[in-house]
Length: 148
Image (cartoon, rainbow, N blue to C red; front, top):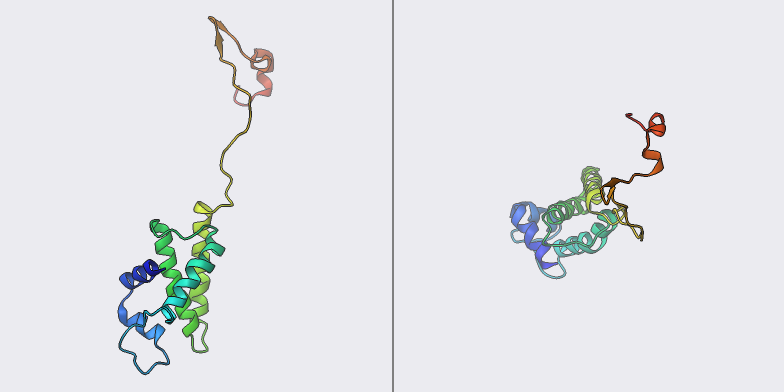
């Protein structure tokens, strides 16, 4: 999870992160990156909770799509936690959930992968110089085949 914090810090200005993580602290000039800091909690929540829930795969720091979506999720979570009676954070969070779900459509586990367990092997069309085709490939069946 330390890598997600580093990725978030690399993408967003320090002042933005300080404002979102040190809202009630008197020391609002440095970013709290300790293991009990707000940024750490947000990264933990997104990486181990929200990302697997909405994207339906485990977060992979080497996958650039995962990193981009997770970093946006951390910022959205911080804004959600920091909202002051407005729904600004909620709207940001809802947009992130929609983005995570769209990533799930292309990388999620619930998509159907083309596989087969058939033990059948297709017969060749030519067998010893003679064209071998199924019965329904004969001209009598042209009216039943589309495009004939």
